[in-house]
Image (cartoon, rainbow, N blue to C red; front, side):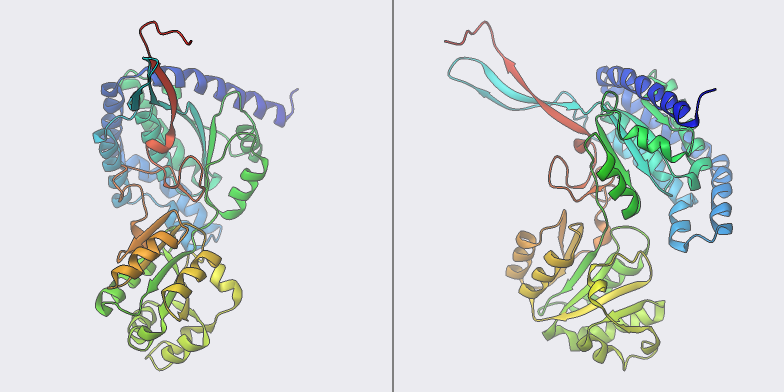
Length: 430
């Protein structure tokens, strides 16, 4: 009788072999076939809304009974709006230009050959994610359009939702005449499956984890294939000393409170000393009304204490607060001397995810863009825009804070590579 570990090894080896075979068929697939699969998938998601939500309710109810955090449960839910966005993202990906086969940088050399680069699929990628079942569709849609195969391993808390969504993907692939094995869901929740997936370089070309810091650190340490990752999203809003206060209040509010659970929600607020007296009481009133806990430096706390309703929500910030991703109605607040101090603070304490400056000073804005070392840097816009859908990528496979291969929201191009191509007509090297 085989051990559970041996059974998992056999299962994952089979998934990997089938994914590798499917990836070769996907690399040959034409744009029309891939787009048909995506449009079919959008239609299936809309047609199966009730059955998908029924499966999702099993997971949501179990999560609530287990006492999981509200932010975690929020990420788990497949409401009407989420399902429609998933369908719309498939249509948006279908409408995007197909990057596969594109040749760029063609240059004729003195020898007579023409040298350039062609964009090609990565091959097979493994997607490991927690709680967000919508990732199943984001990963599937981008894998299909980029000509890759993907092995999905979702968390146990979303297993019923993920199975139902994966069935929708399989139906769409079959209807488009593409291999169903191009998108496979690991059918078990055993942690050993993750260990197998991240150590199969024969079958898997890259791993993309989406989840908590512990998960990503484990995968980064143990993987034997390349990993595209970000560990956390300590995103900053900096309110400059020359700023439209109405705009600054509305953007800061949106960056923090539009949703608390995503990695692109603001976690840290920096305010220039010259703006603090006018700005902080106004944003403090907004945060107080929404129940946002404010962890403050001494200067910001003194300005916020007189705000009606704010005092019970004020805490003294510790050094750890400047480094923390809360994913909750909590924000750290610090008064800084100006743009130089803000940039230095962000580069020291930030997670290289997304940071924004709110300013009317063009020079400060340009310095912020150049000098803040993050995957996405913004001027006068909410950090919540740091998202593949909002950036026009159709969907995202994740947000990378790495500096090699892909950085920021990873869409179609991030799931491709380039190879050199040489065009000749009989040239010989002399």
